[in-house]
Amino acid sequence: MTLTVLNPATEEPIAELEQAGTEEADAAVARAKSTYPAWSAVAPADRARLLRRLATLVEENLEELARIESQNVGKPISGARGEIGMVAQVFHFYAGAVDKHGGETIPVAGGVAATFREPLGVVGLIVPWNFPANIASWKLGPALACGNTIVLKPAELTPLSALRLGELCLEAGIPEGVVNVLVGKGSVVGQHLIEHPDVAKIAFTGSTEVGRLVMRGAAGTIKRVTLELGGKSANVIFEDADLEQAAAAAPYSVFDNAGQDCCARSRILVQRSVYDRFLGLLVDATRGVKVGDPSDESTEMGPLVSAAHRETVASFVDGEPTYRGEIPEGAGYWYPCTIVEASNDDRIAREEVFGPVAAVIPFEDEADAIRIANDTVYGLSGSIWTRDGARALRVARALETGNISVNSNSSVRVTTPFGGFKQSGIGRELGPFALEHYTELKNVFISTV
Ligand code: NDP
Image (cartoon, rainbow, N blue to C red):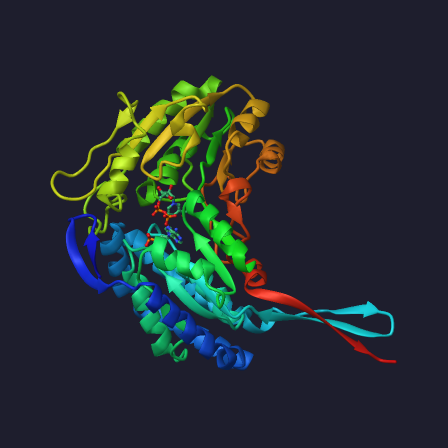
């Protein structure tokens, strides 16, 4: 079966690909399995050198990769360049991590106990369409650094950057069969990988619903899983915050990537005493978001990824919102920046919209803000805006979320842990923290008596 890949900004085909089925998935796993003994035995310095070369190749091909990502996802080109830049940094980081993830010796009676971090074997990486190359690199980097071999399944909508990354792995000198890119349906080849007896682990990013299927499917073989799932993060604005700064930043924390971001601060919680003033500033700032052709250097927001997804996003907005922005006319899966006023019980505040729709919700005081922010099944990200340092730390500690920023809306850095509390996932990506999810800890006791 062929797969037609579309540009969401023009609705035009940009590639025709062969779709893999279960037979091809079996072949990819078999290739990864057969190359595992040799790859896991590569000397650490050599493995590091190969990853470093991959990072450099990503840098050298940054413009091409950014254009692929921009055309396939509908991302503004400037943002796509930043994302590919991060891919290179991720590979550089894990090149440096190869020989720094050691074991310990533990004092025991009668001998010595030593721990070793052993690779898992073949790992299945299932990634989504919102940050295809970025999220693939967060998994590929630590998986390769630890000596695993890989079957990478990109989302059907956005397979192009993963295919190019697969080519760059070969160009870097990573042996054929170590990284296998499998283009196919999640419900077919994704599910097959999850249940496959020769796949030791699944690292998944996507919806919480499919995350549940991953856990269920992995149970048959007690497969290791890490899951990075949905979010409904709160951006909490206290009355003592720099309101101008908070309002200027807020649109980009929910409309970046057209809101298709698991870290989107899609619930904006505002202290009632400054609610009207903040809402006015927020609407003004949102008017400034430049929506349009992703290839234009000044564009800040592109279209949604697909027609089906636009329908889903639209289903969340009934009635006239507080603010609705402009979109280009003609082809493309456009959806305007939208601001609605809501209560935390409304559907818009409870479910992940994954589109450019912000729900603004009032709160009374610090305790109320914490209660509302935590009143969700998710716990991925969030922000606190206040000039009171003690309050910032109190609230940061009280929020049930994996990544929180104070007077900032950033969530992701190459060196810091990223992942969710509650139904936002299991495990942490990035930094040295990801490495433990791509190894098993082995204890060896050596008798000295
Ligand atoms: P999915 O969770 O369906 O897709 C993520 C990945 O999982 C894709 O590669 C997909 O493959 C694959 N997949 C789908 N079904 C299965 C399955 N049964 N077994 C194994 N793999 C599977 O996300 P959607 O694309 O449907 O998006 C729906 C919603 O999920 C969004 O609106 C958003 O709320 C959330 N989401 C969250 C993301 C995050 O970053 N946390 C990322 C993407 C979505 P394929 O697409 O090829 O079928």
